[in-house]
Image 1 (cartoon, one colour):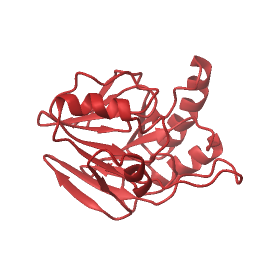
Image 2: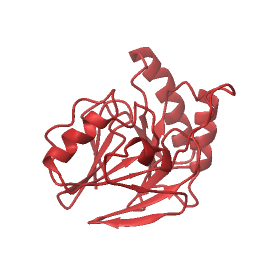
Image 3: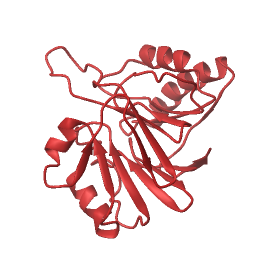
Length: 211
């Protein structure tokens, strides 16, 4: 499986010439030229993960694409054909398997209502938690690890990576960081991944990795 990291929290996954797109939000470049897209996974309804204009662009080239999201995502996208997902749900989509974990977005502040959030495991190898620190119930080959957000502290990221113990990791959810911020936060993810024998890769927008 080929993984292309786009801006912020968006990933394009390709297997056997088919694609799944995860969290195409407002901080991601316009996704207008992707073909052979079978599914879009939206972990929660915040604009940096869920954007109607992006979906219209994707659907223009892929009219039969399946859109998976939480109940709140499906409510927001009432004018689209969607499938609601919950913790424990499992779907086969072409050469992809999609398994969903967790229920809620990490707390930003006690004054801000919590949202639904589902992390996703793709093909049993790539795990992306969305805006959460939900741990999957199995070993993780490669972890797409949030590195910057209003809802996280770097100490929580370190604990998360230390518990998941991925064989490989890369940073995501990181558009708000400066070059110095990337260097600082990535070093913590790298340190913790390597402490358990894994490896870390810093993917810039447009960079590709394979599993």
